[in-house]
Length: 318
Image 1 (cartoon, rainbow, N blue to C red):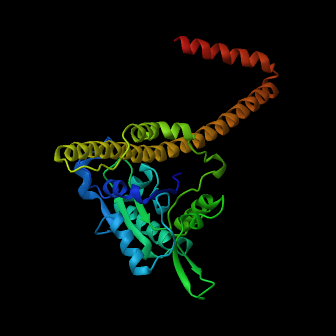
Image 2: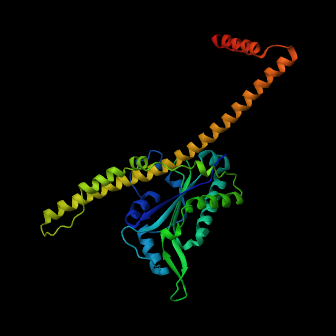
Image 3: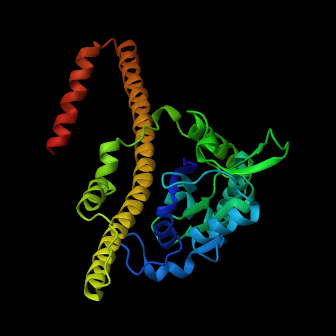
């Protein structure tokens, strides 16, 4: 059985440029070997931003008078990665795959009363091993202003994800929505959905390398009118930016691989449990067979077992 998969990540304003280039396939090179550049033409958008994510955020702030104090550490956008396993998509075919992502898009636009206006981008990637969709949105909440008595729209990631079980509720609601829409999927055992240890995640997402680069190559202002000094400083900044961009791309790809590995791990656990049950049934059946043989032939069970064991051993030798 396949699973309905939805995972979330939060992003600060400084992360938006890299996220945009990766999702919208604006990069020249990709370290992720699963990405096939010859398949880019098969990717499609359910919502195309027509501009960078940073510019789109500014546009939304102006058009909807979005409230909320935004500083460097503020999470201004969220990203859902929505998928299932490769076999599921192969089974349902291209048209149903498209409906799967369209249905997921409708779910996100209505979840937490978000509104489609605040979805920045919805990009379906078919250029990797498993089809998946990246939905990027601004976590806007709609609340009553006690002073004016009017509804205000506010960027508030922490309030959008209020509660310790917020992600669990997301997955439960997503699963129910997709099932009601006619997709044969399974929720999975929530108790077994263990997160990747933070140290492992840091390792595979280049966390330590990025941290090292930030301490070794800090961005500093330069007060000089010397052209050569300015050129040299600019080269350092370009090199520094490109290095961090490379680590970011690796991090994004690693997270996607983690999602796939988590799905495979869940499937293996389920398969292992099924094998355990099958093994138990077979043992029970064999024991009952020995009992029947004892009753029919008045033959000691242990003697019968020895005969069977010897037969199996002789068969294996041959």
